[in-house]
Length: 216
Image (cartoon, rainbow, N blue to C red; front, top):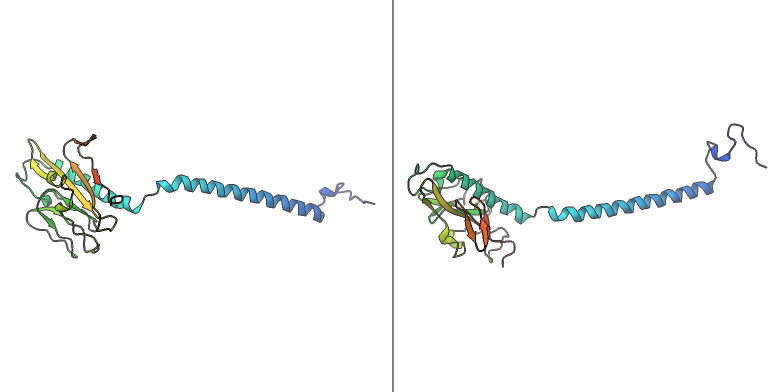
């Protein structure tokens, strides 16, 4: 015989623990629900990883950004210099172009000597037309020169006095994959619009000729 409490006419309304069979069933339901939530979470995280990971920058990309950003800085420095304020054949240092130390790339504005960055203090030299790789920070890298650029590109790198301003083609080269046996990464920038193959390249826009991350 079942005796009902007047305050709790139904056994389901009682504040004390329900029969073990009901609790066990509820526990199983809660566990199943938790597993479903966990499975959904894992699927959502997996989709998030798939969508996000391809967008993450790689080390080569970060290193190559050094070159393109410095070439753009050089472009602005030269184009904002009044001609012929510095004469017919100014050196690179006359434009105030000084990339931060720790540069993996060498920079060229034409044939000539390079700033030596093989010691704690950089050493500028007469008729300086480039800046060498920071071999003090990266002694394992190559001491690149203009002759390390592809033979069809190196002769194009030069500075000349135009009608109203200085015109130029500048370049940078860097061993971003730390492999001395393959060609270095090579970019150029120009004060004039160019056609490189069938591709138009606007003035002041860096163009990559050799990708060190994929070259052999």
